[in-house]
View 1 (cartoon, helix red, strand yellow):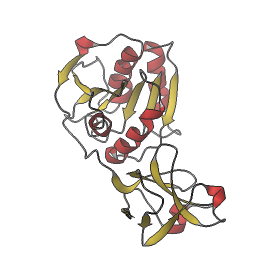
View 2 (cartoon, helix red, strand yellow; view 1 turned 135 degrees about the horizontal axis):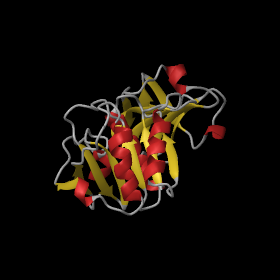
View 3 (cartoon, helix red, strand yellow; view 1 turned 180 degrees about the vertical axis):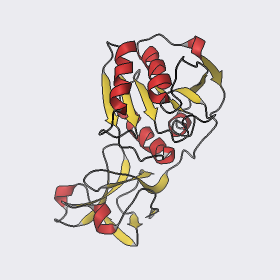
View 4 (cartoon, helix red, strand yellow; view 1 turned 60 degrees about the vertical axis):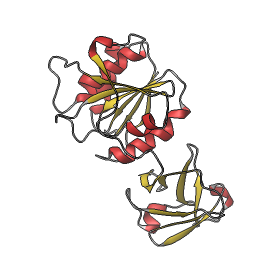
Length: 242
């Protein structure tokens, strides 16, 4: 299985081109579109989203992860093995949180330079062929070199900021493991805890732990982002009580 995680969006031709390259090199592999609306140009937010999503997928799968505002610059390309899963993408911090949260992580730099690679589309020309080889069980040792550390490493602890806003207007944060009695506030507004949408009144704001273990802010049958003016990057205050 190859899992796609990008900021490419779905209205443009980029995802289709990546899938065509994957079909060329790994025709028998199932390709799953996990997310193509990761926050644009924001590998920090993407790193925390990717780390939260990864455990939902079975060991052995390969993630092709591209949030790459530095494409075409001297930034390196890497392969990470962590938690029994594979990750292929840029060395800009995007893969650093998942690597740091697993003591078994192994790292390689991609040293292969394919002929005709586009300086603006490494997702298609560089990352996709490597991900395809790994997914079909042909580890490309001749195209990689082991490394001890990534060039860019984000703090692997919780990120107390909004990291994603879904189409409902729910605001995901990079905070995990919050007890129900915690005080949570953002943009000057206090949110009370609720287990789920149907357990709070229509139009009421609340926070909950979502299906991938992250603290999420929502308004029942409404948009937390619109109601409270929330955006990716906004700080979130979480006070854990004794």
